[in-house]
Image (cartoon, rainbow, N blue to C red; front, side, top):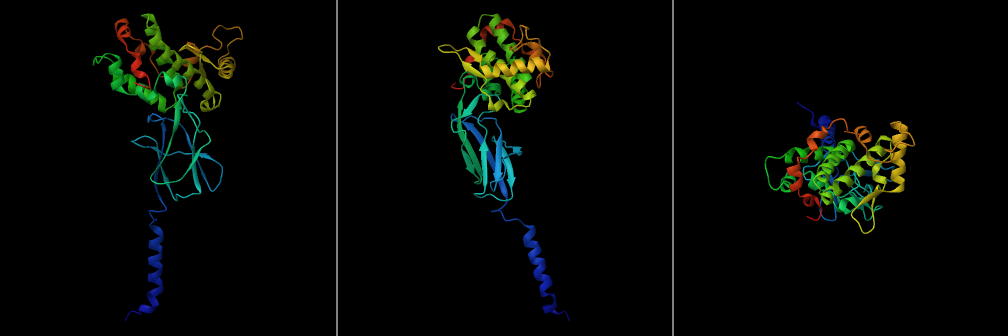
Length: 291
């Protein structure tokens, strides 16, 4: 005969072990952190997290299909805080409340105070990564590399390949200038310059998101480097590329500089040159954020 009283503690222990092995859904769950512009467009940037007032650490989660970063947490309560970087990776947006933090709250947290910077008002990364927008820019034609352009830029933005973006946009700008489409070339010229400096900062171990790189000249749609950004670019060119202080390329987004940056060796520049006929009919306005 089995002594049930003798086995009671053992059974209770098994029950408790089973309870511990199954985490409570209220304590462990997935959370999505999204960063979007005030226009509702996704913004690619870095997220940091602090638990119980410990040091802030960058969040390394998985990309969500709906945009943002998906993260599994053991516990989500008021002791867990999140903050989003002031600027996005390429300098298209900056937060209107840069010091604002948010406490953990399931199922998602949204930072939606990103407003366009100067370059962000004339060209949009989300539009550049959309094949349908490229088709529209080419007049609805299907015999153009709309999908290839969109997918390549989307990948470059996500991987922070500043050299790739700089060369691609520089070649597009050159194609447009060659047919006299100067206004259409300006957004791509700005993007090439912005990406070149951001890439130079990255190579020097500095965070491009902490820099204001471009400023818009008063009463024009032209962009120039801020003094701080220009100094950083010159320092990179002199120290990393061996440019002389008298070099005419110093402080400019030249070919050698762009090639030296992340992704700069992975692009075939000729693929981004537009035939004159395509460049003449190209509608760059579709890449405007307000379109």
